[in-house]
Amino acid sequence: MRCVFINIRCKPGTSYKVAEEIALREVHSELHSTSGPFDLLVKLYIPENEDVGKFLNTALFDIPNIERTETTLTFKAF
Image 1 (cartoon, rainbow, N blue to C red):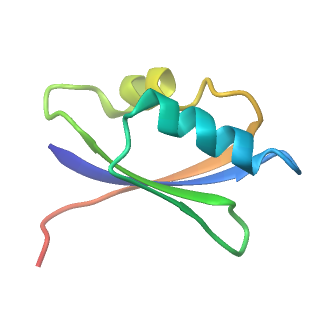
Image 2 (image 1 turned 180 degrees about the horizontal axis):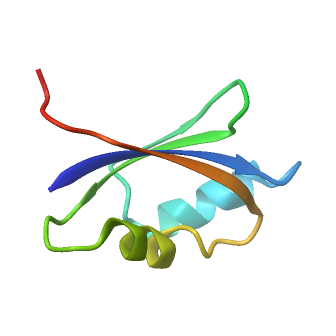
Image 3 (image 1 turned 90 degrees about the horizontal axis):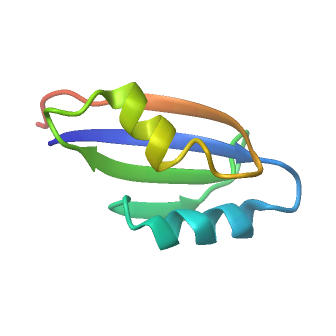
């Protein structure tokens, strides 16, 4: 499994709706509200045999009111 962090910027006033939709899909390990340029931070694990882009597009990025995302791939944990 590959650990991935995704910052999500939502359209104004929709972060709770977006967070609820993410929670309903049950693809995340952690979901946090954040301050700064992004509204939400999602931690999830992608199976090794899955294409990262395809997985994220079908699992998260089709949720309405997502304005922008930033994905951070992780490597070896220390």
